[in-house]
Image (cartoon, rainbow, N blue to C red; front, side):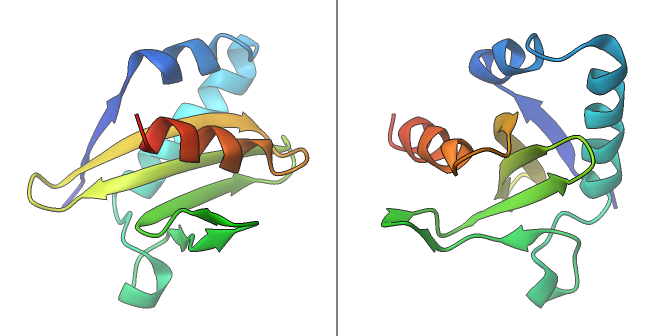
Length: 106
């Protein structure tokens, strides 16, 4: 069963920072993960997050595209079988986690 993927307006802005080839790869990875976005400890593909440098990101998971230097943070909405993309950003200096925390608390 594939989960529905939902993007918010902020994520659409995140995607604008990438060129068309990168956008295609990012969306392809998200589509692959949506087939089983559960955390790895539940038999899925997602890498669960917890506390990252004092930020409580419990309940979120990440997709890491190492060759592109990109992280995607998402949240499973289990009652609706949806996954909400929280942020897509470069993997530098843990910035993606700062943005995820900020957006999660809004």
